[in-house]
Length: 93
Image (cartoon, rainbow, N blue to C red):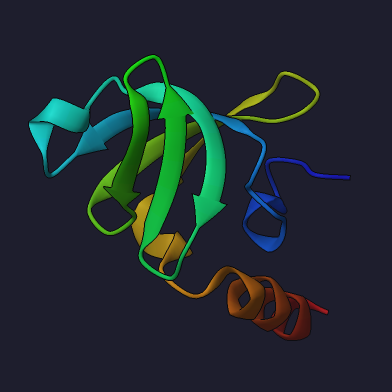
């Protein structure tokens, strides 16, 4: 089950997200659903359509399936999603 403690080890696609802070001020406040993830970006589908947001130097607020809000420093996400999930599983057991 996804929780604030293990959110980095889970798939983010499908979760609701808000950009809390970004190096590009135009992206601050952007919210929607994560529809894709690459090594360096999240693709968010919101009212303004699809936006590709860099992970590095961006702070995200993610809503977990149980409604809990979690803030994530995007720099902790910079890695191919499948590698991030596997790497964190092997280093933490």
